[in-house]
Image (cartoon, rainbow, N blue to C red; front, side, top):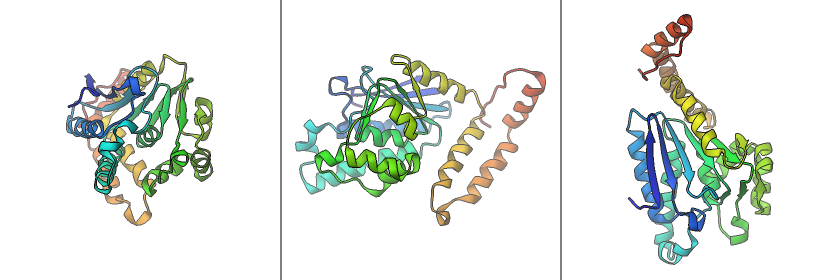
Length: 261
């Protein structure tokens, strides 16, 4: 795995760090491939309950594609198709990750960084953060899946403004449009993301994971919704040891010890 993608675990919380701060964590094909591998490892680890995505250096989350690599990675039609297929797998992998994913956004979040953050369940940023989708300044095309994620989050009007103007939006503008869940003071983003991750990790995993799945179904076309799976996940919660533990802990006025079964 490239040293430009770091992975960390601390108890039930895992982290994938984009580690190219000298380029504001711009992402190369090699980095996307490393993220894909890391996602697969964390997905299959039953000890992991929450995943945080972040950027190294404190000045950027992800600032989009590494343009210096375009001549080798996106020079021809086949290369472009391979690059796009890889990024699509990563975006789909983050969106479809079965456990909650938090985007810890320090500083700039641009282009592919915004696209990646949209795949996360929760976005926390610093009050110095700036967001932009500069496609219209570069002549790039954006496909349906990425635009739909944006529209589902901020609505069609703000989605158009982000794309049409291609300008930078500050943290407060991002909060108002619903692009981020929470804005915290600069320098406190990591702590805020960690605190939220620990709070989520302390709750019943089967409940949290079922809600993530069911919310995901609500934005799908009605004909594609896996309602039987939704029902089965809810029934599994009520049949779990964690449900019994939650009731006992409430009556005994203590913190529950959930095991995810």
